Amino acid sequence: MRQWYEKLFENYAKQYDRESFTKGTMGECDFIEKELNFTKSLRIIDIGCGTGRHAIELTKRGYDVTGIDLSEAQLKRAREKAAKENLEVEFLRYDARDLPFEKRFDVAIMLCEGAFPLMESDEMNFQILKNVTQALRDPAKFIFTTLNGLYKLFRFHTDALASSMQEEGAAISNSRFDLLTMREHSLLKYTDDDGNRQEVEVCERYYLPSEITWLLHSLGYRKIEIFGATLGAFSREEPLTPNHFEMLVVAEK
Image (spheres, helix red, strand yellow):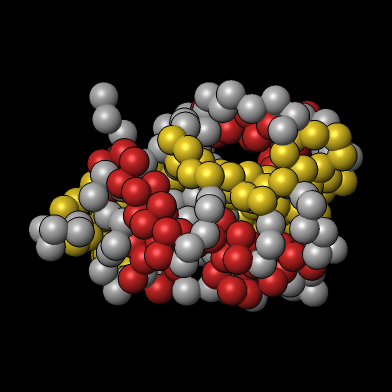
């Protein structure tokens, strides 16, 4: 059965690039570069690279980046954008739950809910973390963002989160958060690249910082740091709070 994220991204590449949450690429890449001490020799894998915005920008800055994504439509858009900039970026179609790489990369990035935590079970989400880890050499760094469970828990009995949210081209409604599974179920209405209105039933997993720490420790990461994630302005000086929709994770193995 085709999952909601497969339907969403089968014809939502150009429109995706117009969404407000894709506008922080430069600042996010600035943070990544600082974390890597501007070492251009490091090989980077971009998990759930989408239309290639981080992979392309980091390639411009002199890094060797491989982008992987499940959606051929997203990858097609990424390749077109790279070609327009006269850049050679390796974009490959893989499911993050089943990656073929073994100790090939020095750095992994997974931003803006790239693959994790969209999967339909916790086991599948964990499989993504496991596969990313297997693709990394020793030592290596893993930088990713994910949905902050504290954000939902602190708003569960209030009206601070409206039942519907509007993005430039997408609207979320009928949201329901399950405390037992830490999953939000909602209806996403959006316009595809052909101008047609579509809708999918979304199910996303929110994680607590302690869960992320435990999962990464179980995979052998020796240092795990979690910060608040602000679009386009990632910073080590921003402690995670319940007001952050996303958390920023920096792990070292």
